[in-house]
Amino acid sequence: MLRPSPAPAPALRSVLAALDSPAAVREPRTPALRAAQGPLSPDHPLPVHVFGAAGAPGRPPRTRLAGWRFLIRQGDRAIAAADTMLTPDGWAFSHFFEGPYVASTERALLQAEALPGSYRPRLLSVPQLYMLALWLQAGGDKDGAAGTPIASDLMVPLAPAPPGIAASHAYRVADLLPVLSTRLTPPPPLGSPTPA
Image 1 (tube, one colour):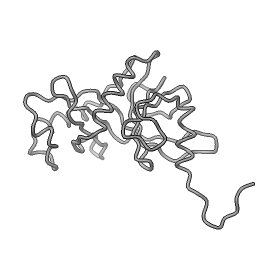
Image 2 (cartoon, helix red, strand yellow; image 1 turned 90 degrees about the vertical axis):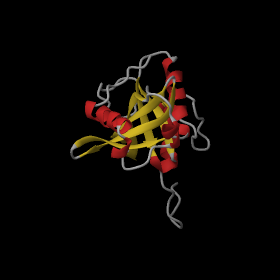
Image 3 (cartoon, one colour; image 1 turned 45 degrees about the vertical axis):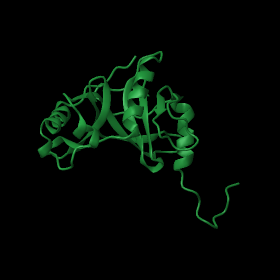
Image 4 (cartoon, helix red, strand yellow; image 1 turned 180 degrees about the vertical axis):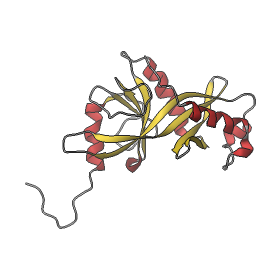
């Protein structure tokens, strides 16, 4: 069962305003939004966390809240997504987009609903690996702002996933974190001694 965190009201208002007034948005709408017939609605707000550098040895990498993402629904399917960002004046609309992550996010949310247990859904971005995952947090705060992946959390990499990591597969963080950490560790400089 999923227990979504409520999106900040200003973030939702900024997306509704961008949907209602296309002229107020700096970038043109995506092709799917331009071709849409009928009402569009923001759905499934998810806090987007960015996977950062590891803290002390043996500690999990830190995450930081980077924004909120809303799937934009027309009828019974998501056709695009909208991102918001935190500015000095509060939450503001960032941009609309479409592509494979929209469908894979929707698919991962449906998959997560069928899992045993109770989770708070979030998105975890790993920019260095061009990876996005649905992070199913076993505990966590209700507002989606804080948190670090713990062993009992689950991660569902979204398609397209990096080579060697199966998309749409629910991994325990304890199993996936070592793989990510190894890939994110820079190789030693050429000519440096090999550790014994």
